[in-house]
Length: 265
Image (cartoon, rainbow, N blue to C red; front, side, top):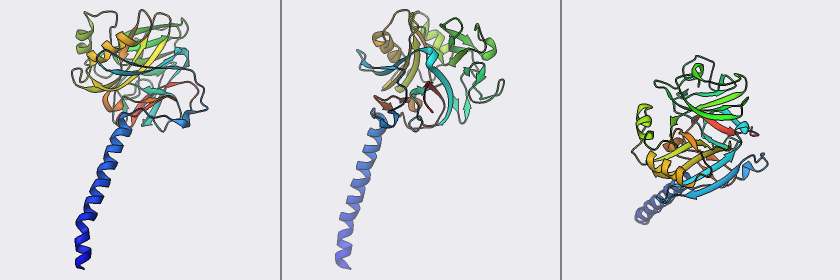
């Protein structure tokens, strides 16, 4: 009995050490890009780019044709979903608080229903719109799908967020405040959606904790193309990406909506 008692402190220390190592490993898994072999075999309809800004904000970017984007509901962390893409707009619980509409159908319910993706809740906010009939993209500040200006209601998608105003350095901060960008001055993981004058769309996530200004500056420094414009998406633990080259898991929280590349399940 005495010998068993003498062993217990060593056993306890070993258990604590094992738990500490496991905790560190879990943190690393959440924050580092992770290869995802399960994506092999999916149509690879995007190009991948990784770049660091002058302030060491690391951007992971997927370039895709807007016609190959599918807005879809998620309800889980992105990692288990067999589709390439990134997280979408803001949400609370199971309610989507940003516009997310595909061909006039909100992705999380029906037209006019709260939390369906038909509305930008509370405030008119920057919404990136692909007009499939005209082949153009724009950022429109709207409250709901009813406010969208598109050529054909059966051939478009609209993703809500917060205006970046990449072409208007003197306006972006005031506009972001008016549209109520959450935690703009805090160090958070972030995500966004940017297009350029040649019609290329970039799905962007950073695992670097940074302010909204630092994220926007990193985009201006590193995203290729001219006449770029875009929106901030949901951020922090929701900042997630599924790519064959890297998987960013945020804090592995379930997200309500995904901006997916066509061809996934």
